[in-house]
Structure formats: C-alpha cells, structure tokens
Image (cartoon, rainbow, N blue to C red; front, side, top):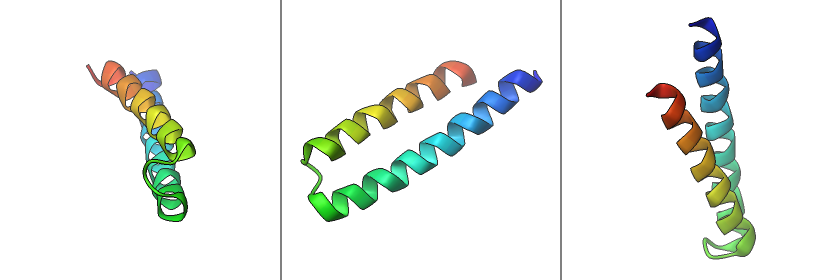
Amino acid sequence: MLKIYLLKKLLKLRIELKRKYMYRKAKDLGFTHPQVVNCSQELDELLNKYSDVAA
C-alpha cells in the first residue's frame, strides 16, 4: 500500500511539473511548436501511468 501511495504522489508531482513546464514553453514558443508537442506527449504518458496506478 505504501509503495502505491508513494508512486502516486511522485507521479502527481511529475505531472504538475511537466504541465507547468509545458505551459511556459507554449507561452514562449506557441502551442504547436515541436518542443511543446513533445512535452504534451510526455505529459500524456505520465497521466496514463497515473491512471494505471490509480485503477
């Protein structure tokens, strides 16, 4: 149980950091810039992992 709890907390933190980073990049480069799109894909992967752990 503790392992799952810690994994979820870590994933939440990584998701929030990635989301903030993506928004900063999008503000500077635009939402369609390849770096922003790549960051969005990485965020999607983190969200999928979180969804798998939470299930």
